[in-house]
Image (cartoon, rainbow, N blue to C red; front, side):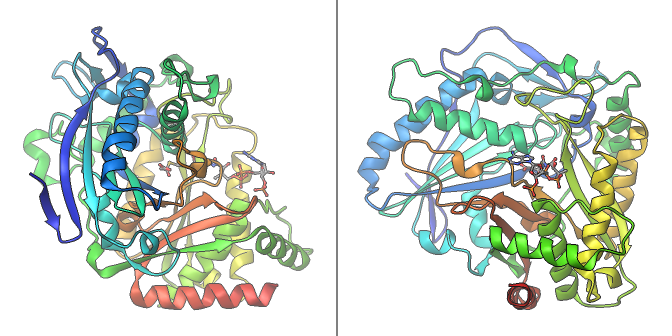
Length: 466
Ligand SMILES: CC(C)(COP(=O)(O)OP(=O)(O)OC[C@H]1O[C@@H](n2cnc3c(N)ncnc32)[C@H](O)[C@@H]1OP(=O)(O)O)[C@@H](O)C(=O)NCCC(=O)NCCSC(=O)CC(=O)O
């Protein structure tokens, strides 16, 4: 019988999907330094909404669901580590992913009577509305699942695929590749569907060189960081607790069109003649510069308060030798600078942030070496402490290069993609615009009051530049 978890959603089934043909060879896959860096981070949740107005329960149960389940099982055959678990045996220095026969991914099948169009819209919505669509990721002291999935039917409206992923196991690029692989196998009608090379994951850990053993430095940083709760079990795999009350927050999506981006670039360029720093005015920098200044102004407060500007960079193309684009795992790192709010709240705020981010991106322009990486996690932890104590953290989840709207399972592109977990991290989410090449979709979760101020600053600022 279906269990109701609130009056909008019914859970019909909680099942486990195993890799097709249930491979019998057990194996383990080590974590690299880029994985152990994220060991205790909260899971990343994404929702992919697909609109099918003729989707009855019958059609969902007889066609859509069996196809999704079967293609997931086929996909897991290519992504076997995702069917396993993160574990930390007594005799090992760091956790690893272990796969045993019959392992599989937890999949929840649910039904919602919430309004699909409202959830898929850009307007202000209660942040908490998205949580029932986001699967719980099973993480205990000694075992953590790499991924969990929820497929939710909205009768006569469509369906939603929710994924929660463990950040110590894979990053945004890998997550996007997994979804596209699943979609690609689902869409093919052939008996033996196949993946193109760019969607075939590589798990070759030898491409990540770590001669100084920074992977273990990060593990030890986490052991030292873990609060008193876990003192009895320091090797616990439990992640940091969330300290945010999602019930008090709202979510909205904002769009910068290609034209907006161009105008922002022109405006900054025309004001920057006298400046020494050669600005790197990519779509990413312009978007962050514009959004971050609106966020700092919306927060208000003392102009002397601390603000952390944060972004994550993909290192695949920046390491020497480069790591293949289809490398599955983490190959990213965070970059952070600490500034005073006044820089963003001034008239020249957009210019100020664009300059700061330009300097940071230029530092990695000629590639990444691991020099100084021993201290990278400790620095991040000290900034996280600052954020807990009140500094405004302005960070990014997702990317405008992941093509999340390309995940078509055979029923069309997603109507909307949301990163749910920005409700606990306070980051903005980025995705390429669904409907316009060169446009950007920005997801935000704020208090109602900050959202109102942000929204009016965002709209007014755009009117001023066009
Ligand atoms: C460091 C960056 C954030 C920002 O660098 P930049 O400002 O230089 O921007 P960029 O690399 O996007 O592109 C710079 C310019 O290169 C060209 N260019 C690069 N890639 C392109 C592409 N695929 N298609 C078209 N153009 C491209 C464009 O001219 C672009 O300018 P123009 O833009 O003007 O056209 C980025 O390079 C990067 O690493 N992005 C990936 C970050 C990431 O992996 N995030 C996820 C973290 S995990 C996470 O958050 C969890 C999760 O997602 O699940």
